[in-house]
Image (cartoon, rainbow, N blue to C red; front, side):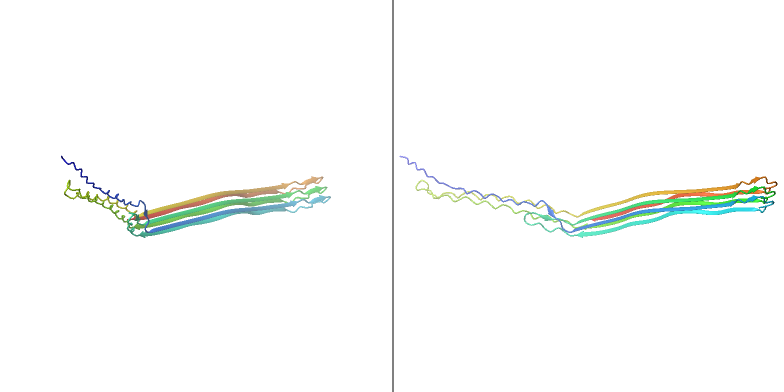
Length: 331
């Protein structure tokens, strides 16, 4: 009789431990950092008003009266007016505005080595910002007025006065009248900006993550039963493979230079000039003789001379300039 011996040898294979994973850090921290900001603002407002008025008025009157007076008022009559009338209104404005800015930044360092997590620190960063603004408003008003008025009057009256008022009559007017209104504005605006930035250095990569643990081997088989299996049970399974190593850390940021410059000039000029000159001259000779034989037989000379001028002028000189310079170096 055959003996059917069922010898069961049970081997338990141990599972290998799950491999570990090393994660690399994504973002890098900055190394050296330089931040510079400059702001310059000039603002100017000028309001000017000039008013000038000149007035001249001259009057000469000769009006003798003769009644029953033979040969009266026979002397010469000389009348003259001389006037120099001038008016001037002037505004002068000179505005100078300037912004001068200079920046020089230097940052140099090497990002430090990341930790086991694979993180890394960045290199160097220079940030520079400049803003320059000029604003100017000029309002100018100039008004000038010159007026001249001259009058000569000769009006003798003779009643029953023979041979009276026979003298010569000389009348003259001479006038120089001028008016001037002037605005002068000179505005200069400038912005000078200079930037120089230098950044050097580079970030280092993170460490490579460690590999996973190696899987353990299987347990050894139990001893077989006699007589079916005279030998001991076979050995357990071999050790499992180790987990894969982690990824290398990302490389840190290198060097970076950021520069910004802004400059603005604004100018508004309003000018008004008004000039007026007027001249009025008159000579009047109006003798009145009643029943006066031979009266008013003298010569009459009348003359007017006038120089009248008016001038209105606006002068504006505006200069605006922006000078900007940037120099950046990153390595």
